[in-house]
Image (tube, rainbow, N blue to C red; front, side, top):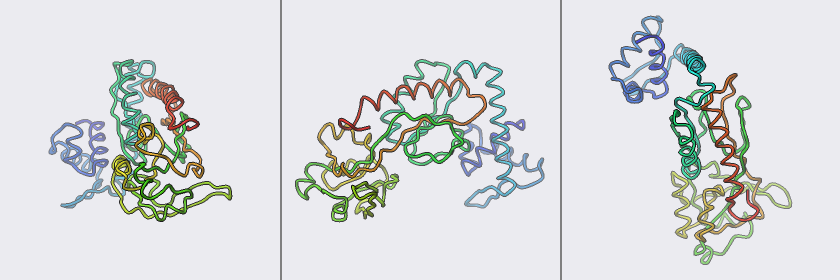
Length: 306
């Protein structure tokens, strides 16, 4: 292996926290990965990875070297993109990330349409309910729901989603409809551990901001599961409006406490702040921005929703 290939192996081992997992991702043998790391450490003259029988982690030198490797590989990729026309013609691998349910409902179908327009591009869609670091995880484009905290990225707002409380008609027939957020303390509540809305629910009232601490009796690992339980009539859940838009339209769920809803959360298309943006990133961002703005203008949860 040349040094650039060794760097790629090292970065993958660090990200996967294991030799076998890195080998699978790189489609090479585990012994090849082991030899590459050993060669790097021998040439540099220091240990980059601390290994035990049960774990693997970066040494202090390894952490510094990882940052340098990512920078060097990024610069190499930019040079190759420039030489091959990648900054003028969309081509090559593109990684896009989005929240799981938003990605399933909106982003995956849009990416399929995008690929029909640009046959020289290949897309990897990373759908996860966690905040992904664009630079560290090699992400080209991200869909972010909520207020942004990283001013180092380019961000284009495409719409808004509401934070809604909902339940099935059968639940309200048995327990009544809450008319004030404080009544949630007596309700059956199901929530997803993947949600940022898990414990403190914020509302607005005529008197100002209102915070209610709820104690979910049922916590599941996915938003879709919480929504399904709510549809069955067991209890209330709090989700983002797009996650239940169709269920509300079909009458499976009904929204409550709408007069107390907090401000809507923005949706942004985000990409890295680089001097030269590859054509595959530029065209993908432009495509997603245009289509998502159409979707969130034409598909509200109810008239007047974002």
